[in-house]
Image 1 (tube, rainbow, N blue to C red):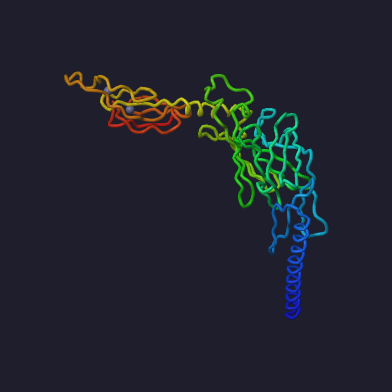
Image 2: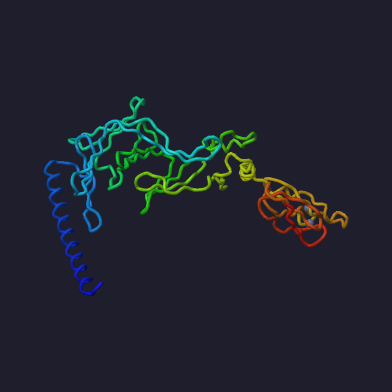
Length: 339
Ligand SMILES: [Zn+2]
Ligand SMILES: [Zn+2]
């Protein structure tokens, strides 16, 4: 390409950019003036070099004007509602959207408020002021707290049609620059198809956490490969396999903590929740001096590994690595991992 041609194209581009900008500014001004004249409620608007849009309320719909041919309409009224759930289906872990009871959304342009009622739930409705709706080009969001229940978050994603998603009060939702971080918190019954016998009762009420990320249109763009409960990450692939039992044991150990204690005088090792009583220690009995036990904690009892002292042969089951402690046949135990 010749230098002249490049310069010509550059000049052309610049002219086009300037003229586009000018057009959008003028159009934006015109559209805003028109909407204000008609008394339309503007939910949000933007006019910069990258984006040009006005989102506003019409009599029975949400409108998105991108200053193109004609504004896009999102009719309200009766709408299908979805909810993301992390659950077990056919033994496998999955994150899916499920249908929730539908909403009927009506708006009052004079009072500048919107009423949402839930199908099949007598008296379940909330009225939200337009000014309390958070809106942008991709979605509208507001809180739903009928019947003094904890507030659910409602998102109206502006896709081809209005996609309504409701998030439970205990879901964690965090809007980030490049999407929405969703943390699903649910009791174990959602994750565990058949609850193994001997499951500690606390595990039923303990919240299990699963993380995913949504784009600004409500689609899942990434999801975690594990569920977290009681500080333990369970890989989603472990559900429906025997591997799950290993994690189950680990959580049970975490919930019922026992520790190995080692007396520094008589070398006795005991398993106990808390530090054993000082008590009478036989260590110096022969020499005629009485003493008390001097307990040090070796490690938390667990089920993942077995350690054995190569000098005295004592064995410990733990998920950690045992600390040093006085050994009958040496200064300290020397721990070897058996499994
Ligand atoms: Zn002792
Ligand atoms: Zn030892």
